[in-house]
Image 1 (cartoon, rainbow, N blue to C red):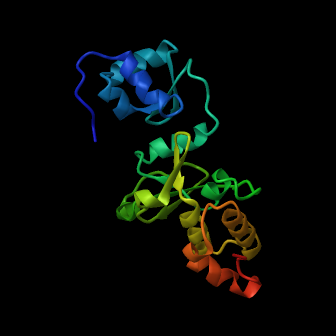
Image 2 (cartoon, rainbow, N blue to C red):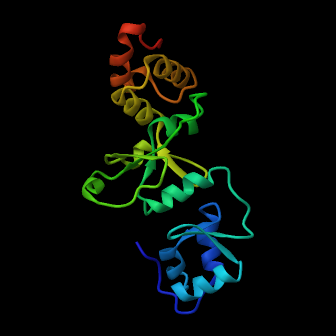
Length: 194
């Protein structure tokens, strides 16, 4: 939902937007802060902002954040995506594996949309409720329970799934009762100790 209409460019407003997103902002967010495409190009040429990818920019003097590459993908998704599957598992600290691809779940209604997917990104389509979301800094991701259930449905190796589920339960991040799909996949492998 767009914010209030700002007539004159407001650098402080643009900075506030970018600060909440690891120093990054979109073309539409710049417009919300009063920056026309021409004025944004002026700041690009002047070295005040950098183009990270089409439609996504970074304030030059803002320190790079730990999850900057994920923030760029999230902004690409018009802030509708939620990091999920192996990406969320890693962000929750439940796996030593570094995912080869970034997994993001977009709203189910987006399944029919056509757009250019960034390289190295795998899309999933489903609606993720606010109760099934968590945040790591400026990055939205699926909750531990939703992440494990998604991975059980997607065919993650039972060894990796079992290790992650046992760790999540032991750390009090979820319960065995909240993981029916995980229990089903792990039943032949000894289940999840409660």
